Image 1: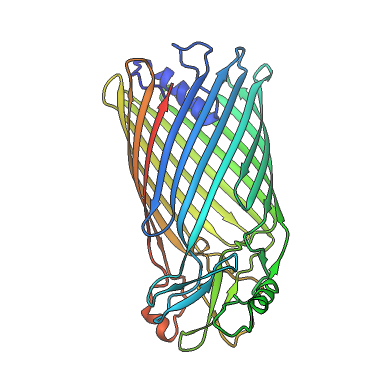
Image 2: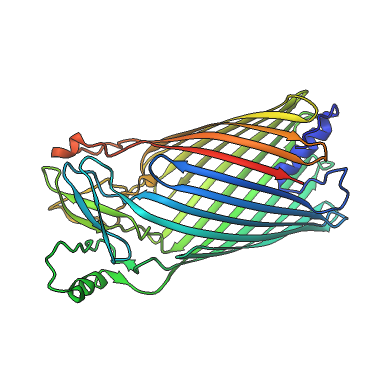
Length: 430
């Protein structure tokens, strides 16, 4: 949306339509010049992960509805990440993923691995053009590289306009190839964490025991996504979009840095083992979005329902209201609510003496939870016509017990701590 207030509501609605369809919006005062969007984002969890991300986005209209979009993203992550092990009343010792060191966690604290360090670079390009009258095609490539992860994605889509361009039908497909090469190697499913508590005669003996729990070399995951959608102009003020998406992935789904605690009837940890997830996952989702143009701004509301064969069902409600303070400035409150149930193989811990399940993970991201985001964005148009915006949000994720009984001393431990984070962003468009 342009910052400048426009009494012609249809113009506002046209911009909203472009936003829904992912079509670049050409500023009338810049002709066919390149347009750039830049942003710096900070995401910080309390006592956990910290992220700083820079984004550079470029759009170019080559005329006759031929558009190019390019994006470069660089982010750095540091801090601590929950390993999946349960808290205990006494001090616990864990081996770092590399096997070269260990760390301790005080009694009553959630085990966090504070060696989380990574830098990610992502580059993408997208080309959109007409195919025939009332038809558009789009194709793109994306590559993302982290220290232990490589992802390459190709995509294509076809749009068809109907009903005097008041209706647009869309179909898209993407293929992603991911290569995973974890630090220290890939842990063998349910293998015990090797901890050097002085029981090894030499460094070589410890290393041999550690290597026996690891598989060397990279693994891969292939993902195919299909998207079908319809965008409909309801009236001169309202626009709606409905999407259905199908995602099918096959390959390595484990998080190589997550573990589970095996506890006895007193709730005391007897072993730490690495997780195991299924090698396939199929996800379905339906999405509905409505944009409504008011005289002083735009209301944006969306709902998404997603389900998969891991038995995770989720609901997402997202709403924004952009209110124009003047012809050159606006504010935009934002509220997002998310809720999901746990995966069928999610377990906060395993019990000693019972057979190991086929798959199990204590990753809180696969557990039952709710999350809420509250935010506010302020934007303004500068005298040179460029745009500057500031965004500040608060995020809280609240895991819940999905009915697991906590034996012995575990009843006194907080196995589902809330996660709180602050998000701050500064963006500049020119």
